[in-house]
Structures are given as structure tokens and as C-alpha cells.
Image (cartoon, rainbow, N blue to C red; front, side, top):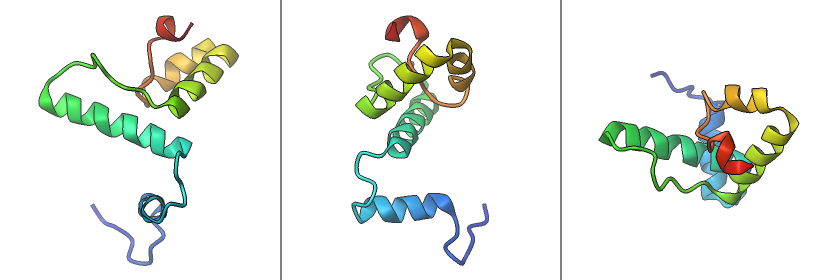
Length: 88
């Protein structure tokens, strides 16, 4: 993987900002956390039982599901989100 040397990588910018306290409680942080936990669980070969969703991610999921259930189902392919029956 090639990391840009000029500091233009958005993920590195986010990590630096988080460490400096600029993005405390951000939505992107909640999504990134869920994604990394899911990858770790897959790597260890365990299921998603007991997965803890941060409140910011739950609020986003509810808003998206209420706006467009079909968009929510598509988004679940990319971001670890609760099953639609769970958030009703």
C-alpha cells in the first residue's frame, strides 16, 4: 500500500485529528470503529453476536432506514449496521 508523503491521505488526516481531539464523537469515527471491529471478528472467525453499535451509528442507521429502507439494505453491504428488524 502506498501512502502519500504530502499528508493528503484522508484517513491519516482523520487519525491525526482524532488523536488531537478534533473529532471526538464524530460519525466517521463511529463508522470506522464498527468496520474495524467487524474485520477483527471476521479475522478471528467469530460471529457478530454481542456487537456494540455506538449511539452515533445507531442514530444514523435509524434515520437512513426511516428515509429509505432500500438504501439502508444497500448500505449494510458496506457498513456494519443492525438488521432492519432490530431498529424498528
